Image (cartoon, rainbow, N blue to C red; front, side):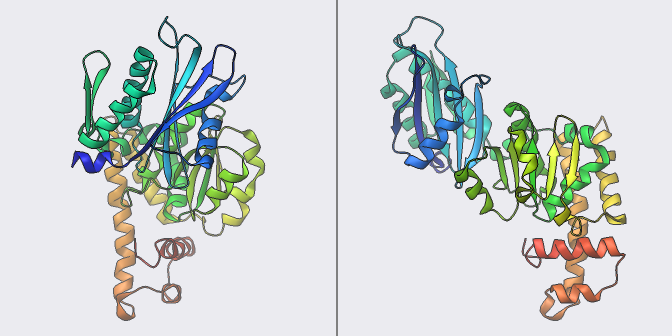
Length: 351
């Protein structure tokens, strides 16, 4: 099992900033495509002059997850000509805590030996055995990082605390597979907030919709447009002037959610939305309920909504709900609108 999980890892790379201020890509194993290498350089804070120092960032590009850990060389070590360096790990899976822990060990190993060889040995050990262990640099056991822990690492309660009943807008957008763009000038705030949102549709357990750290570059936007629905985080305020990129825009510093003109018909709110919103808010405001319990409460309510759709499906020919058949049922307008678009988003109930 450990080996299978370890083989989700794709590569490890090294970026250095020397004492003269030059930043270079210096090594990788086994290989990284030129396009991805360029992206990792752009995400690495060592190439972002005048911007904040980020010890750890993560994101997704072309269906590959990347995790970048950056360290400052503070002591006299073998890295005499290096002031900072970044370790970039790429993988198939979303698990920031797992790759942050592994990267910390790789960083300590590199600082001690000043050569990527020992770092590669640690990486290969994890890839082949699911473990690397060193009394001085720390130990890492891949089975300690279950993906469910990564999915539950954020706080749904914090999201609801900030947005209250308007959380239903985020829930509805996710259910309908709409495009959600979140802006905050601090990448750490983006990573913390955006990673939580897919948990609102826990029945899917789909974090592939998450693109937490995107820049307004042609390559990244082209990659984003390939996704039918997403949660995308931007530090660049200019994204607010790009309505072609979002159906729902979240200005995180001010706690403001805006629905684009083109998405308003699909996002029309009614009694059903209000009922779901009450469940979300009441559960999140209960001090005795954990984040995982809040997610469970939302999931139960979601399954209730989907069950109603399944019941309608059974009344239709071949037990499959078509959009035309759904139109023939008489619901309150907003509820009918939501169910209609939900059926389309769920690909006619094939979740």
